[in-house]
Amino acid sequence: MVGDQGTAKRGRPRSPQVRAAVVRAAVELALDGGPGAATVDAIAKHAGVSRTTIYKWWPSSAAIVLEGLLDSVHASIVRPPGSSSPAALHHHVRELNRILAEPRTGPLLRNVIAAAASDQAITRAVIDQWIAPRREAVAEILRQAVAAGELPGSTDIEVAVDALVSPPYYRLTLGMPPLDDAAAGRLTETVWRGLIE
Image (tube, rainbow, N blue to C red; front, side):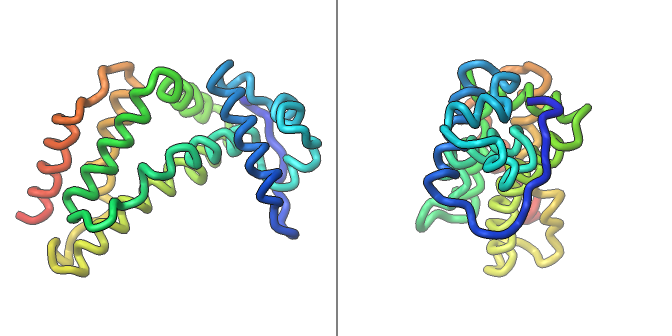
């Protein structure tokens, strides 16, 4: 997957069936054999599509893998119906921590993040297909809390997001034990309390 890149083009929307087959193939290959197994050639063969089809809609195999991973855990960034702001934040942090602690998903993401240090296509994929959607989900919870008067109008949303989501990634990349549910709850409570004081 490292260095495996092309140029995504705009135009006719992707076929939902083709997209589903491609992202499913990418995730299956990456989870079974690591990120290096999810090359464009392997994804195309596994999904039954051409390389041209893949490069028409994705800039790299990393982008496909990360898009597929996000699809598979999409519920983790959806606010639970009727949840309070602190509960919604706790849901996000707990689920992120759970995903990163999974025996196959965690190492896969760690390897992709490590590869991003030397490959701009992978860096872009990590940001666009994984980091940005997850950060936006947390930021939206915080913006809603500010709008509802639960948090001060001066709340620095970006700093608050960093405080909430950085610890699970820090532990993942350094090979430390993941937070347990109780610790994730304490993290969320501590950040929330700091924002309202």
